Length: 512
Image (cartoon, rainbow, N blue to C red):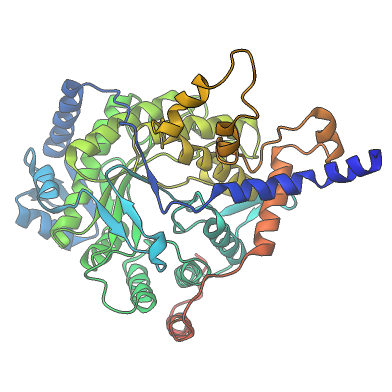
């Protein structure tokens, strides 16, 4: 009898994991929030921040580096251009953006079931972006490769809680700089059928991404948006040729851009949250206005990435209160402007998937949901201030995203949710475990974590005394071992490969 019990226990974790997976049910293409966004700033405060942003644009303006055509567009729209400096009459950028930028748009996926709404009451989770290093418990920290990139695309595809395949989920440093965008976009199209992002490291690379998308989606893209790509300002108050060229390519092709100042408060903006919010709005308005001057109606997202920093060492810090305050403020400014908003994620400064990583990520993710963020980059995998993507961290973050998917549904006020009949029909002082209502709801009653251990101490010992990271290590390996690619038409795949091969033949092999 004891031997039988031990046998059941030793295999219990796998059985419970299978039960949890089965209980998730069909995944939503994106989250639909039922609660109103948390409002931190008064109407008067938001009006003052808008006034301050207009003052920045009027008195200081933005510097346009090495992109004369942008200067011409702004001049023709009524801005004051002196050399490479562009100053805007009060309200001009807002007027341009509000005239044509959509409040809500659909990013179409290769599989229509995975198409996502961007804006309104929708929240879309996308994975980590841009890390040159990868980390796992077996191999530690190392430079990321194209194999790592493909692995994370597969893991994102398999997660029911990541709605988007992302973009540069990590930098595949084993592929030449001028060619890696081709391999990355091909990986998104071949190993996933969720929405994805294109390259922004050069205008011609953005054009390659548009062409690959045209092949994959079977024709012209002017009537549909299939990419949403990240365009960063060079804060403070600079827009450079690399970002503007990529933004122009995507906007002209009716593909979406996320216009995002990347701000470490105290270094690239003032230390105060109100100052960061006003500068973020100013920089974003200029970038969003540019996209609308390129193509009125091109989808655009108002982005904010604001982090605090250690004033002793200069290192960026995450999970602190000040960036959360900025997030709430700028999210409200985006709603007033009438465009979708990007911010948040599962950010941390920890080098390992440890307690610091967990609490800093939670302190970033919760304001993301409560603030009503529409597009969430870095939702899974972020380590070391973004320098690394972690396999175990990716799995643990996805588990938290699953909790948020339940949380945003709010309070169930259906008859079943109210459960009045179950309470009225029940005798005081007796448990509910065997009631008809509990039996009807027990499989879906509560979110079931895929990584947390809720067993007894003795059972935990029998099953290996694994901590959360060790359990996550096992999960990602099992997921990759069971991965099956989504369907892709052979003719389309062949055309994609042919385009990649042809372009690589004429591009340099530089790693600089």
